[in-house]
Length: 117
Image (cartoon, rainbow, N blue to C red; front, side, top):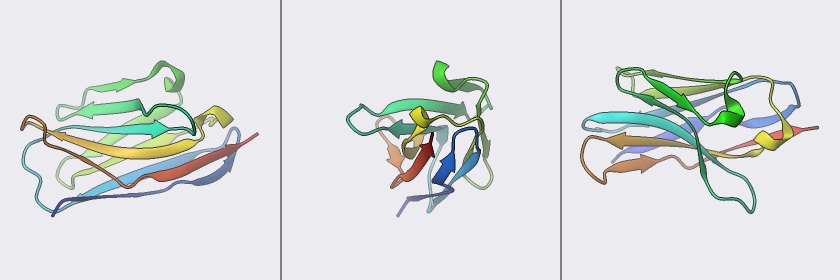
């Protein structure tokens, strides 16, 4: 059974840093894209950053220059380094893994990030 286990969330002051980790356990065939989403209270879940199997990255405009996504393909692990955090970054952050098989994707349980002003 596939599980995505996230860690690294917490409470930090504005301007601080956090590093989120997501490790996939179990057998996942053909991982294509690994990504981080976030959902703030009362808002829709949004894509924050993604990284392809080839290492190409993409970010939502609001985090460009502050967040960095990286992955270790051999370990099926993805990280999100977050610096210069702002109160508006407060949300539950979810790890997402998409495979080459249509419709086959996995979600983590979410980790809370709270940035105080």
